[in-house]
Image (cartoon, rainbow, N blue to C red; front, side):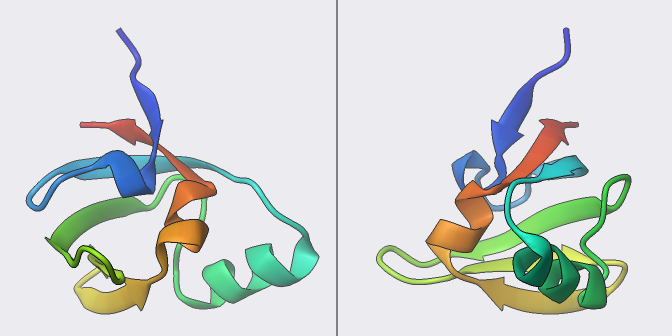
Length: 77
């Protein structure tokens, strides 16, 4: 069963494959510059509540806001 969820619903240690970026060209280009593209594997490292979500993409850590993370759809692994 495929489980497509927004990135902000994952917990620390969870991993997912990016399947869709829901936003305009500026949003998508910003994420693509960070290596967050469809097919990329993303792991949630830390969740600050309230605050950003720390993710690992290809060995590089990024902090993304919850609003941004809610528009990154992943297939949970």
